[in-house]
Amino acid sequence: MELRQLKTFTAIAHLGSFSKAARKTGYAQSTITGQIQQLEQELGTHLFERLPHRTILTSQGQLLLPYAEQIVELAQTARESIINETCLSGTVTIGTMESVGIMRLTSVLEEFHIQYPHVDLRLQFGSWDLLYQALREGRIDVAFLLGQHIQDSSCTARILFDEPMYLLAAPEHPLASRDTVEIGDLSGQTLILAEKGCSYRTAFENTLAQYHVLPAQVLEVESIFAIKKLVASNLGITYMPAMAVQDELHAQSLIRLPWSGPDYHIKTLMIHKKNKWISPALKTFFSLIRERFSCTDTDKM
Image (tube, rainbow, N blue to C red):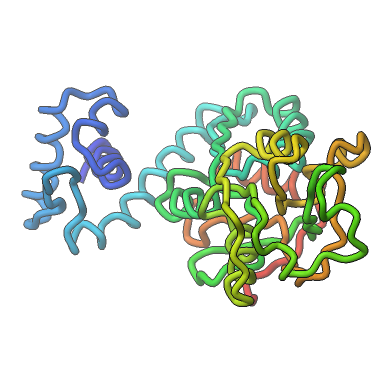
């Protein structure tokens, strides 16, 4: 097995396409195909099944993937250690929800970039579901997500912050004058919420369903800033982390409704795979996170 073959193999496994892997690696598609054929001949088995719209791993390919990933990562780490003995370099790919990335990570990312300018920091925004899948597939190194806990023995999670959650509306909204807002009061209201897959939206909607509360409609908006603008225009109610609305509360363009419903104990979690090779750059990034934030291990949650 050659390193270039394993790099090609992992690229196809993650992207689900020979043509996409060719574009990513810079090889011609015929070269990609030849590398995989040579690898399959050496191993005496088929590694991929070609379906009409996607290429997937065979059972033998699934067995090979974690080993191939570790070999590729180890080779990259060895190269970085030798070539850049006194200058930290490499790439750290970070997945984060929009609110966490902007409200919690901006300062530490800036500090890391100043201290280690040769490390390529790559930031990917998305929902819990999309980023967690990317983490499990090795497409990102670490994820910063809002949630309650994880139930995955292959990953390590650390709590960075407890995140209070607010029910929010415009000052002129009819519920703004209430002394308390109960779950039943949301019946017939317009809710403006983050995209499906968002952990706190899921918890909130599960509670509504449990109490048979039917909103008039639910507007799904991907951008947290767009949600705040729509709610401030009195188009509906939202539920989001307190950290994301401090400026709006201070300016009184949004108000916190006196919510009497459950507290979901949402937290900012830093999550990474246990069996993933930690490069020098990623190890240094983790060290800075531990220095700046008080981390609590949640492996046993």
